[in-house]
Structures are given as C-alpha cells and as structure tokens.
Image 1 (cartoon, helix red, strand yellow):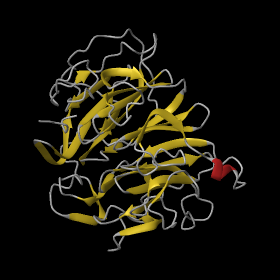
Image 2 (cartoon, helix red, strand yellow):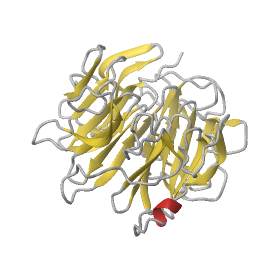
Image 3 (cartoon, helix red, strand yellow):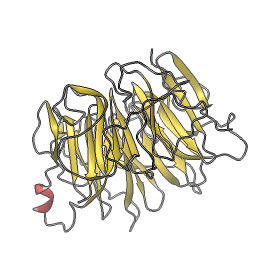
Image 4 (spheres, one colour):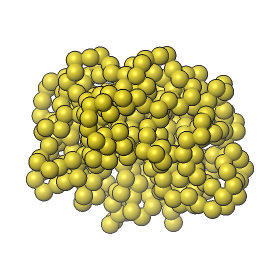
Length: 408
C-alpha cells in the first residue's frame, strides 16, 4: 500500500544547496519542514532548506532512493542516500515520475528507481539510490513526465531521456525509448530564421508530451498532440521535435509567457501580467474555461475575477491548480479523488474553485502548489513552513488540505 498524501512531474529549479557530509539513510523527524515538493502517482519527495531529500510512498523499483525497496509511509519518510553526490554538494531540486525520481545537485542530474525504458537516464537496470545520468551535461533545472525526464542545461539547451513513443524527447524521431540524454532537435527552429528561439529557460513534462519556454517568452511543445496539448493546431497526432510556437495570438498585446506547466494531456501557461491560459484535453474541465468542448488547440484564458491574477500554475493528470498573487489557491477539472480540495469527491468542474483552508494556521498562506501528473492529489507549501496535501492516493483520501510535517 502506498500512502502519499501525508507529505506527477512537472518542473523543478534549484532551491539552494545545503552543506554537510552525505549521511546514511535515516528516518525523517516527525515535523519535517520542506521547501520543495514533487509528486507522482507512485510516490512523493521533498527537499529541506539544508539540501537533504526525503521520499515516501511505493518503493518497488527503488524510487525512494534509500538503497532499499522498502516502502515508506507518510508518517516516516526516508532520507535519500547521497553517497553518489560530489563532495560539498547537496540536493537543489527534485522531480518525480512514475516509479522513478531525479534530483539536481551541483548542477549535475542524478536519477534512481525504474529504468526499463531509460527514464533514469542510464544503461543500468535501475538503482535504488541516486546515480549520475549518462553524459557530462550540467543542468539548471529538471522536469519529469510519466516515463521521461528532461533538463535545461547551462547552455540553455534541453536534453531529454526515457520513453519516446510519441516523440516526447524532441529528438526528431520516435523510438520506444532512449537511455542516454538526447538534445532536442532545434533545426526547424533555427532554419525558420527566428533569432534566439533555441535559447530555452524552462522545460516541463506531461504524460507523453514536453514543452519548453524560450528566453523571449515563446512556448514550444512536442510529443503527443492527441488532445491538442501542443497548442499548434497542426492536425498531427504527434510532433517529434519543436517546430511551431504555441499559438499566442489570444494574449493581450505585449504580454508573454513566463512559466509553463504540462499535465496529463493538457498544458497551461502563466504570463508576465499574471494571466493564466490552458490548452489541450478538456474532458474533465481541466482548462478552466466555460466550454463543453472536449479539447482546445489554442490557449484559453482562465478567469477568476477581474481583480485576481495568478502567480503560479501546476497541472495534474486531469485537473489544474493555480495560486493567485494574493496567495489564494484555486483548482478545477476532475475531482474523482478529491483533488480539487473543496471538501467533496464528486464529478468535475470547469469553474476554478477556491481550495479550502480551514485546517491552516491563522495568517498562513500558500506559497507553492504541486499537482501529480499521473495522480489524483496535490500538495501545497505555506509561508510558515507547513505542508498540506489533499486528494486520493492508494489507501488514503483527504477532501481538503490536511497538514503534514507541521513544525512546532
């Protein structure tokens, strides 16, 4: 049984390394304070201010990174082994896919867990503790999808590894999988005559698609386009390399994207002005728009009132959540597992609804939200250092944000 909620998949950027020697695996203190959290349908992980990583949930493939395959409940997350990390480095960022995990330490990427399809970035059978991925690239950030992972290098290039049946690695061709990191093919962008378009600053990974954001605010997506999640209106089932930018004609004049979030089969983007847009699958209302259409190939703006703007977005399997500039959390889309955090577990909604906060300490507010790409739950970190989670994981359901690892 996997208990995840007591602590997908998207994107993780460094939160700041912490000093100290590499310890052996230990049980986390009861009131663990996290500064970053990542989730998948099988497990979750978090990072503390001093650069230690802790994971909990299923561990059949060693995805917890403890050196064993023993599962860890939410009451006792285990510390990730740091033996492979270079001296003087510690975890700066962490991302989770289905049964695998990747972390960033000293600008190097390490992965552990399942590797049958190359999702851990090496030729090994898989490891139950961190191991450096193949190659010598240095990374600024990482992202993990359902069965693939990507990173933005210090040269502002995107490298990806793992499953590639829909071209989600962006290498220009489909293949079952790739064990070694592959640099995405930007030939079509460069020959298009758009200056600087191949300078990437962010990457985000969905179930079987990937998106990257360039330094000039242009979003490009590749991989499966079965539900319009690439935002290009190309009519293709999949695109194996970035080609055309996401259609941004609906944005206000002069506004540009500053952050992307890939979900199961949909994608969302946040603009410099704080506007939120989503495109792709809308079967459960995860685009947050007043439309019964099952999908949308162009970005559609999410509206929650004229005076409300977003500061952050996160996309789950079939739901989406956003944090406003006033630090209020909203969620919309599928609610089959209570992942909208509204106290119910009924149907779905196309209208963004405020996440309940009755269990939060007075005056505390959310500062970051995370949704699992392959799961029906989410978590939020607060200004007072608390972690709240809601939704459903195997063996546990919480219909509103419930505190975990509260500090004294």
